[in-house]
Structure formats: structure tokens, C-alpha cells
Amino acid sequence: MPEKKKILIVEDEEMLSTMYKVKFENEGYEVFTASNGTDGLAVAVKHPLHLILLDIIMPKIDGFAVLKKLKENAKTKSVPVILLTNLGQDEDISRGKELGAAGYLIKANNTPSEVVAKVKDFIK
Image (tube, rainbow, N blue to C red):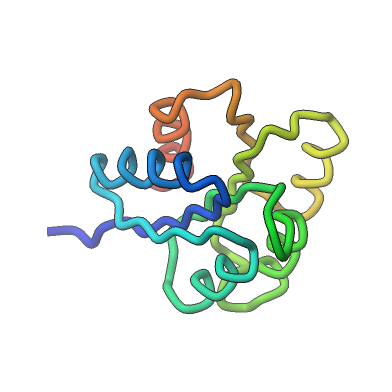
């Protein structure tokens, strides 16, 4: 049996985090969650991951700062990071891409099922 793909969801809104976690687990993924940037970084460094879904507006450290740190760390720099946020301004999207985000999904524009489908494209 192939190893389960491991993803990390860094999302401070518990209801959303749980909803995405269940969706991905139902699709056969192993899911880690963190409710703030600090915990997200700790989990990312501790576990070999296939993908990180990262919110931007969070307590402690925001998603942009987390993304920057992930890309500077040898253990996590090659893990694709998809920003999953409600910040849809062009400058936010550009900043995410400049910092190394593999993708940018706006929560309001994507159902959880669509998010799962788009994530599958990043994890082959």
C-alpha cells in the first residue's frame, strides 16, 4: 500500500481547519493541522510533508512570514505551499508568489471540494 501523502493545514479558524482536515482525510491524506504560524512552522520542520496549505491572516506570525521562513529552511524549502486565504488583492497574490508560494486559493471562491481537487494537482 503506498504511503499516504502528508499535508499540513495552517488555519486559525477552527471550523475551517476541521472541515478541510476531514475533506482531505476522506480523500486518503494524512493531515496535520496548526492554528497559528508558530505552530505551523514547528509541525512543518518536524514532519516530512508533501504540501502545506497556509492561511495568511493568523495570530503570532502571519502566513507571509511563515512562507518566508519555510523557504529559508533546508528541510521545508522544497515543500509546495498553497496560500489559502481571503486576501484577494493583486499585491497579496504577487507577494505570495514572490515569497515562493506554489499556488494561491481564495477561500470565498473555492468550495472545500474544489480546494481538495486543486491540491491534488500539486501532489502527484
